[in-house]
Image 1 (cartoon, helix red, strand yellow):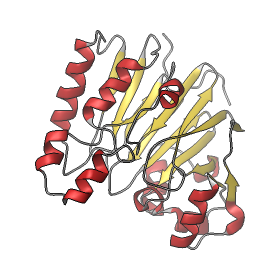
Image 2 (cartoon, rainbow, N blue to C red):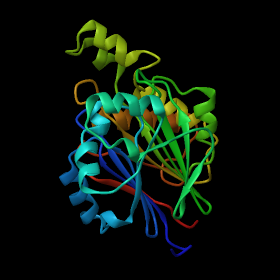
Image 3 (cartoon, rainbow, N blue to C red):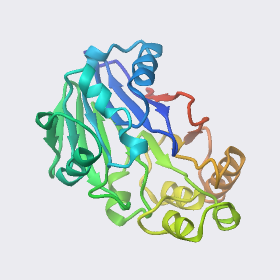
Image 4 (cartoon, one colour):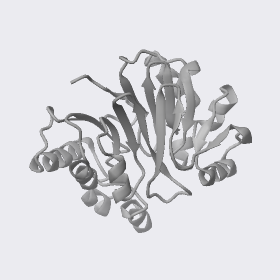
Length: 268
């Protein structure tokens, strides 16, 4: 692996219909969540000129179907380890037919796979033991935080100095309040074990210890309770009002749920 190769983050899919993120440095690749079909994952990797043989393992944030839908077929076709919490694995085994010997249980601390060092941390979601991850490679750091109802002090600390960030911006409070969801589901989404609103995502970006330049993919946008215009307007305005220079200090991206969105580290 060349030390000069960038750290890359590619969101293959994001949203309630499926989530999958690829993190790459040189020839080292990990998958974060596999909530889309095995075929789509393989084809997405091909589009990025990545071979499945480069994949070091699969990290699973939690057991909800939009994060594990492709896992059973992936493990059937490829001899890959699964890195997750024990409680999450128990829930997965109740839902899918998966080989028991593929689990590598995540505990406190970090682990190194090829050129990537991965540090899991707890998030707040209505699942067994949900996690986000930090990925370190040289001087670069990528972070994936979706499916959390709050940004706790610990999560905020984990965001420190990340240069590549995948951050949830799930819902607009007004759209959620007057949208089609049943009351119990509205309460779930907006709870401390639900999802982040656009405003909460912006607040996290303002409160975190930021590097001189960072790139952000705003992810897991609800198709019913949010839209691209609101994400851009709400978060952009809050950041500018908070003194962030969009462009020179922070680059924001978000795409359609099935659109590949990519960022990579840059020398500055």
